[in-house]
Image 1: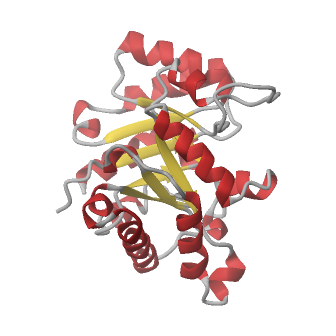
Image 2 (image 1 turned 45 degrees about the vertical axis):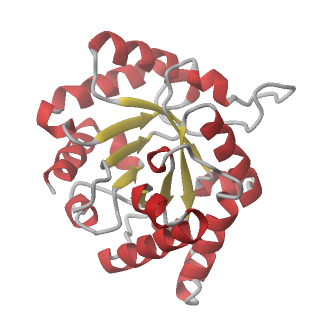
Amino acid sequence: MSDRTPLIVGNWKMHRDHLEAIQLLQRVAYHLTEEDTDGQTVVVCPPFTALRSLQTLIASDRLPIGLGAQDCHPDAEGAHTGDVSVPMLARLDVGHVIVGHSERRLHHAEDDALVARKARAAVAAGLTPIVCVGEGEAARESGRAEEVVLAQVRGSLADVEPADPAGLVIAYEPVWAIGTGRTATPDDAQQMAAAIRGTVAERYGAATAEGVRLLYGGSVKPANIRSLMALADVDGVLVGGASLSAEDFALIIGHGRAV
């Protein structure tokens, strides 16, 4: 049994305004018991416009849920219209930030070098970057999935030096499984997670690799959370659509804790 603390992250993407976000988080909290969050970390990543509202709700109601952001700019400040810096997020008690999500890589042409800059900025400010990697369907079908993913891991961690292993999270999200209802088989997910941990060991050493948490993402739901969390090298999940349902997200959190 690993000593790594399980991590359940809800990525709300571009859904819910700040009032709707408050209502959603309140419903999630209503469905949770104290045991559901005991021994694991739960984080929600709403749109930027909802961060302040959820920060206030979490603090006032003392919710056992952390706040995360969906992206960040690598610079602390500057003429970057529409962007948000890591220091700005830190002032809102944001503890985690997703970097390199496949949707950012695809729709905003983000490459590994930019993802690494964002991850370095997060680490420097004391936030935990959730570095996303994953192969497309063509790479999977051609047998190049591991080659593609491990190249992303190496490029996205360039010069990233977390102060401790728990300060770095890597999320494996096969692109073909995001929002499609398809999920990698447990064997495929474990094989890729083990390969990623091996690559982290090459980069940082075995001790650090043992402490880094690896998440699986891609059509995570209550029906498959137990099988995913039972995998030796999967330490949590990055949940998309199912995290927008208070009932489903609460079930995922509870079932993940029960494994």
